[in-house]
Every structure is written in C-alpha cells, then in structure tokens.
Length: 167
Image (cartoon, rainbow, N blue to C red; front, side):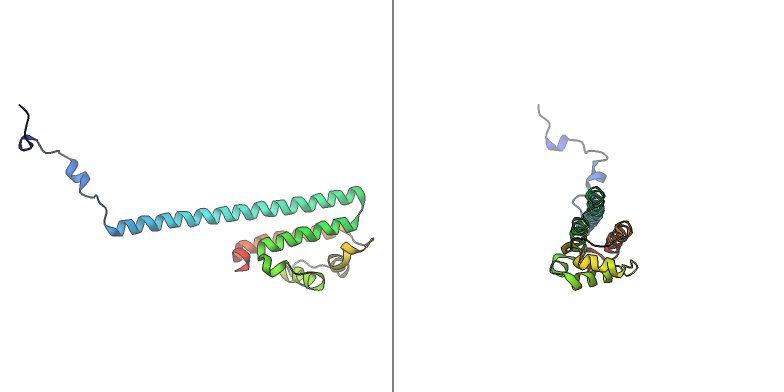
C-alpha cells in the first residue's frame, strides 16, 4: 500500500528556511550594488598596479640609458633615451592627444609646467630641446638624470591624485 499525500508528515524546520526565498526586489538591488563596488575597487587596484609597473619600467629604461652613456659617452643617445622615456610617461599620464605632438619649445614648456618643483637649468632645458640633434653637449648628466627621475616620480604621484589622463 502506497501512502497518499495526506499521510505525509510536514518537514519541521524547513518552512523557516524557505520563507526568505525568493528575495525581495530590494535585495537584488543591494547585491547588484555590492557587485558594482567590488568591480570598481578591482579596477582601481589594477589601474594603480599598472601605473606602478609603468613607473618602474620608465625608471629602468632611464637607468639603462645612463649605463649606456657611461659605456660610450654618447650624450645624444642618452638625451634621445631621456626624451623617449619622458614622452612615454607623459602620454601614459596625460593622454596621447595632449602630449604626442609636442616638440621643441612647447615640449620643454610642458615638461617644466608638469613638475614646477623640479628646476631644470638653462643648459638642461637646451638639452631637452636640442640635445638630440647636437654632436656634443656640455651637460652634467648625473645631476640631469636625478632631475629626470624626480620628474617621472612626480608625474606618477600626481596621476594617482588626479585620476587617469589628468581628468
């Protein structure tokens, strides 16, 4: 003989557990908001990590240029490396449209304005402006190198304070 549905006993304790499901619409909104917050925090962390990696890469490239200069004493090659690294940093922190077309006096003015606390002497400004095209340039490369590193560090510190691409 098979029992009928009327003969079944109720499940004790299950009715409390089942009473909260399905969730009310407000709980779905809360869950969606939490998921959005987690996503935004993840993206911010990834952006900060990418910025730190870019800064390390720029400083490594700059140090590599200095080592090459110490080997061959080619100031033009060193200044080419400096300008390349500075342009890459500027494009990463400020955006391609704002920086890519700058050269000569406009480029030097941009570099000076981006880090007013880093004071470049007239010969260092000239090196940024024309040094790549000159055979010999009288320049204290070690002091100049320290200022360029300071400028790069300033750009990445400022980027974290003002957001991506200077916005």
